[in-house]
Length: 545
Image (cartoon, rainbow, N blue to C red; front, side, top):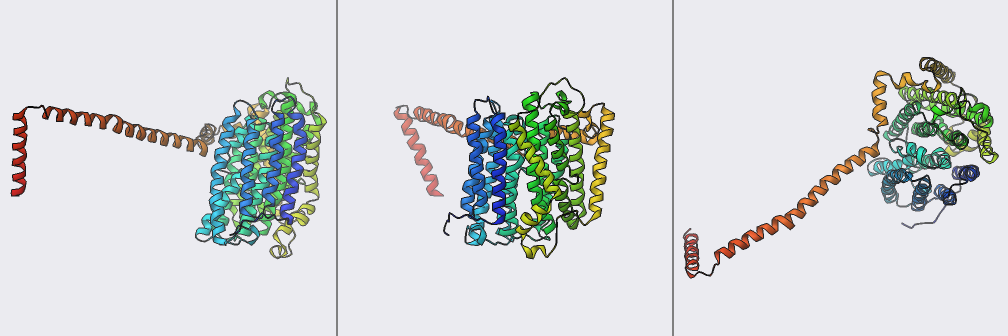
């Protein structure tokens, strides 16, 4: 097999690469002001723009080995950007490095097997079955893609990074680029390299991962009392919709998943930017200390409202249309997947009602002012895109996303505009109305906006589960570290035993036999005669037998 330095410039790769460049430009402008005064701002910006270069390289690569080079380079820039956050950020940087590094090793195995089975590493020439070793290769590649996208169970470093990493990192990496790169590669793997079918085990596996990611991450987001940490869990939850949509292996679901990918990058990065503006001007993201910012930061508040309505799936914003397409595909594959996706939307809306109410409405002693225009401009542009991609969703769906599947797969269907299935639309409106009622009930019961979800948080069963989750009992990284600690102690004990055996036990045995030999060979002639007699008798006895 020849390792070719080849790139692919088709509509899909060019669209994702262009999106990466645009997000990097907008968030980079924001970062110039946000990082002003930080001694490591120059170092951060170097990693920031190098990350853009490697991300575009990974998207355009048409060779799995070449893609792997750019993919692994992203791990280094991510590590560097997190490390800039402060003294304690190295723990999160190491955690992210270990989690992503292990999953990248899985991806390497998948690449090696795929290349061996296909006879080439050129992505456009690969078509492998998911049977036998091909299935194992698919799982290994899927793990690499899901980890990069931030899906469960490879997500646990993201909430930690929300506290430790600079805000522009969160807006760019978990907010936008991770989803674009990870879902891009997952799409290539699922639709081109292996071509999964709706009834296949691979399709079911992806849908299960997507559904689990949606519901568990959004439930954790619901109870957070920090602006950035709440957003970080939603960055995890939203990738579940993308994975679920692609996992349906149906055109409507795949288009919905891909449309949600770009929509999420828009509203999620905008939400993180609003959080950064609040942090920069108010000096905190602790929701217990915030309130009344809508009047002090009106532009930031307006951008937050647009992005929050988008992520909650409120029509006519972009998130509504992509979610409806995912719902359509999920319902066709099984009502349980649809039910989980809709439940995720309920808790998403509930989360942002709590967040918006606590941070921007109500009363607070916090004094703030509007963020500088270089920080506002990216927010306004992205918020405007959320509206445009909703009202004019025919533009991204019909002209950019749908052609990725090809005319044969689409079979003449149109997926833009209001979804034809009015049942889905009505259910969405009912769920959103339910979220509003839930918020009003929670605020009335707790007496404060930040307690709007307390009746869910402290419910009998949920309370114990939340306690365990907040103590990281379910964190795969923490579980792995505990197992590694146990293994290290066992290996340390074995090492000490080996050292004791050779350095103490063996030496004592030698000394004992040396003492016996010394005692036996005392130099007395009668003693030697006796030993000779005993030896002779022993020889005769053995010979007689």
